[in-house]
Image (cartoon, rainbow, N blue to C red; front, side, top):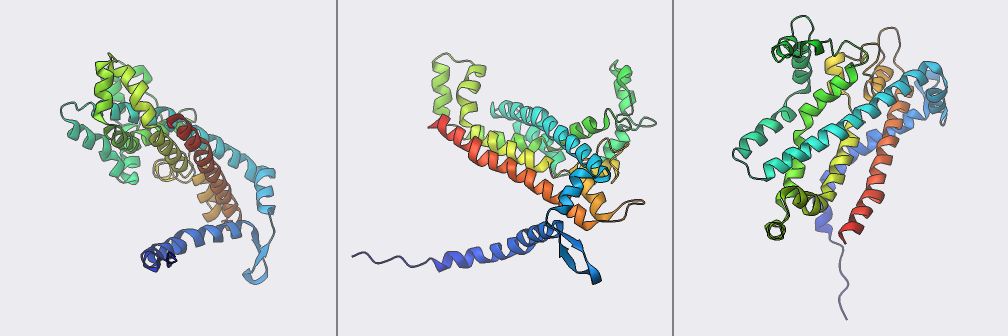
Length: 305
């Protein structure tokens, strides 16, 4: 009769410190924020449970609803630009670097370097570059014969958000590039050699063999892009400030939450409504992650197996 297996307490010993740290700095603040979003301040500073009243106020009162829907629309556009520009460009760069061209290590370092720079530095430098008074963007455009395109990109409501999105793409394109490159170089060389023997060109080899094999990485990059962009705050705050100007044209959920929770100008801080905004952000991100887990992963598994 086989002996019953004992519980692996040694594994628990190794996991416990990380679990305690994660609970203290992630799980507990998250639950506390959700509880705050369901409460209001009572007498003597005590919290009074009010259910979903804060969320109803957020969706119904124009004072809150108008900036919230504006921030949500801007956030959706911010995410779409990253999905349609950053990730395809990252995949293209990974495919080129995976072809083992000369100087691959140098190109990889140059492309990835902006990712490790401070967002404050990135925002400050691009404000200088795009400044309509003394920025170098006007000189560069005039030099290449595109002087007619010179405009205060960060100062117009119609262009501020798109400009910030492209700055963010430039800074972060190295992350999907490295993830795609890591997936591409794991593909067995025998498959690529067999495709070449069968007469498949580089384009057909990529779409017929390489791309289907890196679909799990495509899903990971997509969900990371979704989570990262619906948590976006730093680049907009560093470039446009908490008001996300001009006239809130570059406002996203992160900056809207910041102004609501901490207050700005003549508007006092409202941590309860701010927590409601954070709760909506959490729900949006949770839905995106669940779609990835139960939609994309199952589809990829069905295609591959």
